[in-house]
Image (cartoon, rainbow, N blue to C red; front, side, top):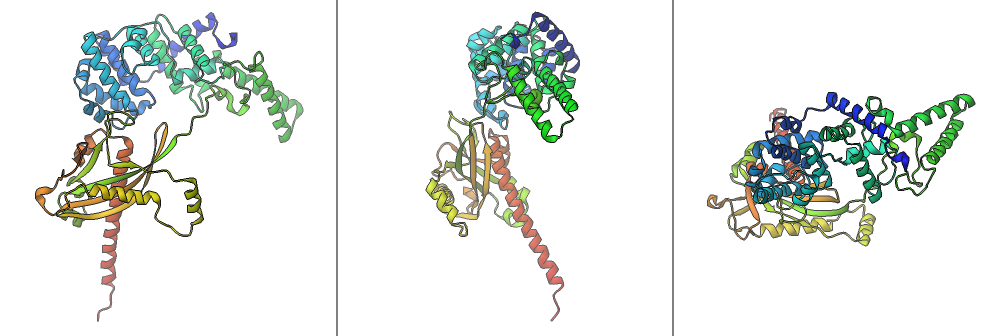
Length: 498
């Protein structure tokens, strides 16, 4: 296992090279600027915590705007503890993985209520105390804010370490994870643990990329075993091709022999070593340093279909006739429903929806046989029944359905679900202006919202996409109407006079 660790000399060289590079190349990010202005350790920890939680599974470019808005609204742990879940959902809307924001609020309430608003100062205590904080986040806060000498292991660090030490094992395997944490704790600089950990993450995010890594710009390329393997293979390949003056088929044969040789080199001691490349997935010349790390194939997300009914209440009926989309949206209310307090997208607002029943294999086969005929699908029938059921909740007196359109399907992929939203858009109005926001028979979780309220409430990005889909559909209809009107005017102009 010696090839999978660093010598003491390599550790010292790594620290020196990486910290020097980081000092000159680190990105200017708001949470780093915030650290310079913090007056207390707890305030620094708060700034780090917010950024680290937001950055989980989310790109830096996306996080910056959310981070700035969050820190402006809740600049410290006390202000966050006084927030409501609805406010947190509203600000987090569109950032994804919505339980993160709710858990941050829960942790803030706990710290203010039980620890006088002060953060625990060690990774162990942070892990035990704060809801939603795992080993990585605890280690990041402790090292960056409190200077604890502990390493961090996130996706970027995994990639850097695997390439530096040519670790090809399954990065979700317990043995591999444990070894990576051991490496991270061994190489962290005791004088500047926070900067060193940020440098490792920065290297993975900007240079040691998953695809097309910038090896020539890497400050620690001299320590990289993955690069050394590529260099060795390239030299041997060049030598063999020149000496044999081979044609294309012979060159391919040389490449295969070379790959077999490299596979033997990286796994010469033990073919079942958990840290080595698996025998079933040997080293490949064309992958270069991206032979490392090897990730297991992701489980295919389960498929789910939903009937989604967008009900738009037009407050001024005349606006529909004018064809002014802006006026229609501004003078409308939308029916939304709040999701349960637990589970997927807990507490967020959504359009009324219902999970559709799965189509059996026999029904799928029959539908393929009837290609020439386009019958109404089972899901379209369920969607219509569901929308009829919703409309029946409203007071029917003076109710007028202005438009009812099946506008299409929208696919949204969560980490574990591929969700197809079958969308129907219904525009209604009440001739009785005293009853323009009906609540008759509506359950408590339903609410009418204006367009402004909708834009400010906590919703998922999928819901916003559905809203956009409806808006674009209406735009296209208005465009056709205007075009038809123009066409009729032109045709009238060229009519022969009788």
